[in-house]
Structures are given as C-alpha cells and as structure tokens.
Image (cartoon, rainbow, N blue to C red; front, side, top):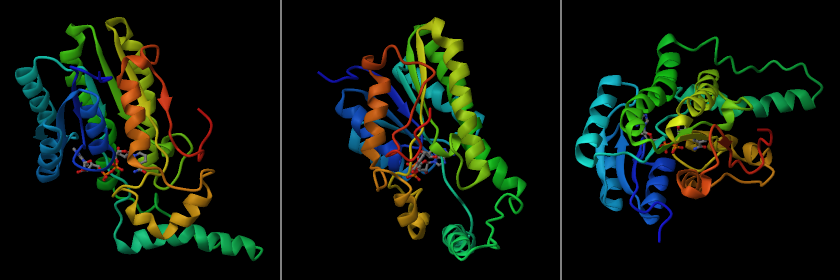
Length: 272
Ligand SMILES: NC(=O)c1ccc[n+]([C@@H]2O[C@H](COP(=O)([O-])OP(=O)(O)OC[C@H]3O[C@@H](n4cnc5c(N)ncnc54)[C@H](O)[C@@H]3O)[C@@H](O)[C@H]2O)c1
C-alpha cells in the first residue's frame, strides 16, 4: 500500500530537478500526477515516465494558471496535493556568474591578508526592474496564483495538502536579494494561508531546501567547495532528500503538520 494511494497531485516545475523527483516518488506511493512546466518537452518526458498528464503553463501568468486548474477540475474532478515548486535561481550573464562565484574567495583572501575588503558583489544596485519582477512573479505570484486556483477545487472538498517551495535563502539569506525576498515571502504566505484554510481541513506547509544538486545550482560549481565547507554534512543534497520530505508532508503521516517549514539542508541553517 502506497502512502499516497488514490491521490491526485499537481507538481509545478516538474520537468526537471526537485519537481521531477517529487513526481516520481509521489507516483511510487500511489498518486496520479499532473506535471506542470514552462517547458513542454521536459514536462511530457516526466509525464510519460510517471504515467501522468503534462500541462505546459507559466505559473507567473494568472490566465494560464486558471486554465491549467480548469483542466484539472474537468479531467480529474478533484485535487488532493498541490506542490508549488516552479522556480529558477540566479540569472546573470557569464560575467556576473563568474563574479558571484569569485567574490567570496576574493573577500576571504582580502580578510586573511588583514583587509580592507575591496571586492563587493553589488548585485542589488545593478538589478533591473525586469529581473526583480520576474523573480517575484514566478516564485511569489506563481505560488499565490496556483494556491488561489487550487483552493477553488480543494475548498469544497474540505480536504487537501499544499506544499510551497521555499529555500534556506528565505530564512538565512544568501546570494540574490530578489530570490531571498521571494522565498521569505513564500514562507510567510504559507503560514497565513495555513491559518486561513485549516477550518476546511486543508494543510499548508513549506519546504526550505539547502543546496541540492540540480540545474539550478550548476552555475555555482566554482563556489561549490566553499558552500560544501559551510554545510556541516559537507555536501550538497540529492533531489531525494527533498522528494521524501514532500512525500511525508503530502501523506497522512503529517496530519498534525500545518504552517510549518521543513528544511532539509545538511545543517547549513539550523534555526527554524
Ligand atoms: N536546487 C536547490 O539547491 C534549491 C534549493 C532551495 C530551493 N530550491 C527551489 O526548488 C524549486 C525547484 O528548483 P530545482 O533546483 O529543481 O530547479 P531546476 O532548474 O532543476 O527545475 C526547475 C523547473 O521549474 C521550471 N520552471 C521555471 N519557471 C517556471 C514557470 N514560470 N512556470 C512553470 N515552470 C517553471 C523549469 O522549466 C524547470 O523545469 C525552485 O523553486 C527553487 O527555487 C532549489
């Protein structure tokens, strides 16, 4: 018997990385999957793998999101689990990524040499309106749009589970203020929504992963040794480290959990 037998689950951004692995584990535990992604081909590939339905939509576009949940209502008639996972990381050009990777090493060298520190990352002062809005749009607007439409199905059921993807960057800060703001916003949104819908029997929790091996962290390969050294377990996590946490939150085993942030992070950040 699977821990998610008979459940209908929609995972956003499930064409790769954490979302794809969450979908695989959900399937193994007995759920039927709707695989959302911005990119059609990866979504189809994962949907074929898990025997699910692929829906291409940009979660930052409220019209596309409404259409996606309309299809879920029409084709499944219910929704038991919604995982708001779609997202992206740092999006600078090659030169900016090189700078992000090199800056902490240069700063440590300067500090070790007795200072002063003259190397600065200056990311915020150089951020465009467009980059700021896209980051907030995909992560925070996207989470809101999907919750709003998902609740239209879950509310009358008087049951459901929502899992929102935060990050340790939203709890302890890190590279990129727009990313940190979006992820911290998701954690606050999660707690307020959990209080709002608890009377309908719907649980809302967040995951706040540490550094996990996916396409999202690939640009930081040059800084990997440093990030691993800052992680007490001395390594990046695997996608399964997050997928199993999602299975737990989605399952009946977590029936007393709502408004919580679960943070598999190898000890990088220990305060919740
Ligand atoms: N990898 C990590 O270390 C890490 C750590 C903390 C949090 N996260 C979060 O986990 C989530 C998944 O990250 P990942 O590491 O698997 O990244 P990834 O790049 O491997 O996969 C993200 C997927 O989301 C899709 N996507 C991006 N924008 C979208 C949009 N607007 N609409 C629909 N789909 C969209 C992409 O096409 C991609 O398939 C993100 O929210 C990310 O911020 C990742």
